[in-house]
Length: 368
Image (cartoon, rainbow, N blue to C red; front, top):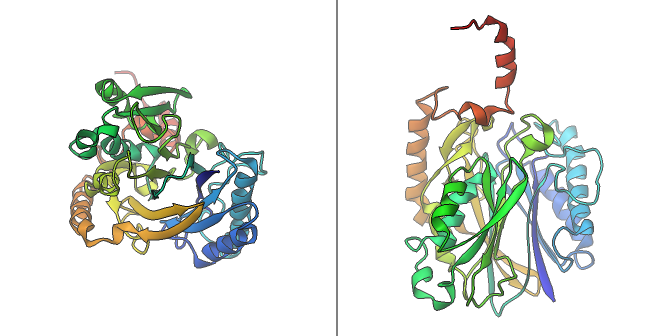
């Protein structure tokens, strides 16, 4: 039997503002998923990062399954009703359609899913981000699967020397391309360095790996809310699944990139550059100018679809230095106020209120 691991997430109401998820929403999600556990799904865990509710679900129905997506959609719809009664901020913000149409993709929620044969031991990490966009995963995913300075296994482990294949989405033109590493590393970097447009979607093993070349070993949610809604309705707050060990990067290798608080797009009003801060679930509560952006890592062992865990990995004091550095970077960037590079360049502000201001003052401009 193949196991499918799905993360389906949505912002259905913040508390207060964009800060956190109200306990009643978490309670409701647990109750709803418990009702279908053992029938439609095998196991589940309800997570959160910032104001996002993250449903981590295991089942045997494959990716893009209508029943699984409908279960998640119904949880979000029911949660939205609770959020409205509590007058939570942005209640139902990520539910951009009125009714379910067979799949939550293109309807607001973010999705990352993997289907695979469980190995003798199957460690996975579910990454949950808040106050940023899918491009925030480009640098860490690249380093995990293609940078030998990050992942010694690329040098030491013979089964990894065939490299990995990166499936990259062009989110502007709606197309995709696959790059093979290490031979196409430089060409790939030319694209994924433009993280606002080109985002890594999936990773597949290269030749000679212990894991089948047909099984994706990492997946990132790539839904862009602004492109669905046609206006700014909140940052995309991506999630990702990464499998570890036995022919794949070790647990420490898939965590190591987050020891560097790299700059990502998002933060306040989705309009600023800020450092990615790894933190515990308890501290995934972005408050300083609604930030800085956060990432949570929940570690599980899979056992016939059962989620053994989670371990709240970034609680580790080893990331204290990274958090301190992130605070220093946040302080430095904040001093720029409304000026670039703290504020995103104009082309990345297309779906904010900036176009309305441009239109308001259009007639005031005169030819030079």
